[in-house]
Image (tube, rainbow, N blue to C red; front, side):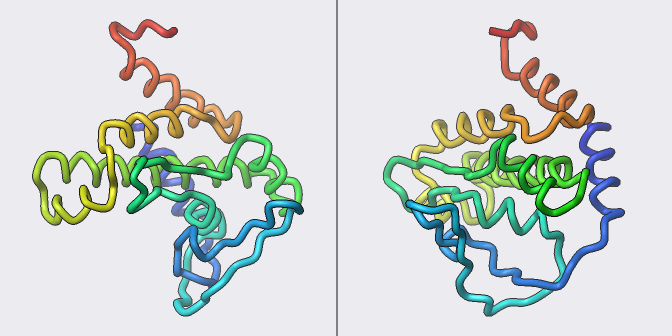
Length: 169
């Protein structure tokens, strides 16, 4: 898909930063009363993009949860806040592109498992209710973090492919 290739090219041109590569939502602790986030366990250090780290730290795929529920702390407001506080006008765009690839990779892993691919049993044992989970991937992909025209067009194409005859609700 040309839109994904364009997003990938744009992301690949951004320089990575040295930091934690232990991407697990369990390593981010959110204060339920305040607005503080604390990170734990920096056992693995490497080069990656800050926005990719943020997507992975703030997205729980709900492995092992009986209800199969995924959760994401990112929304358009937090993406704008990130861009504003980071002083990077393209911060929300970078977050959205990284999130799109993260979610598409997760959906592809689940589809491969449903097709009986390698390690299918292990993944399906951890990711409960796969049909519901696929709907959650689609719902999160449809939720925009930015007004970037490439991301907007991607979401429109996704919506068209998920509705009969391209009819939107």
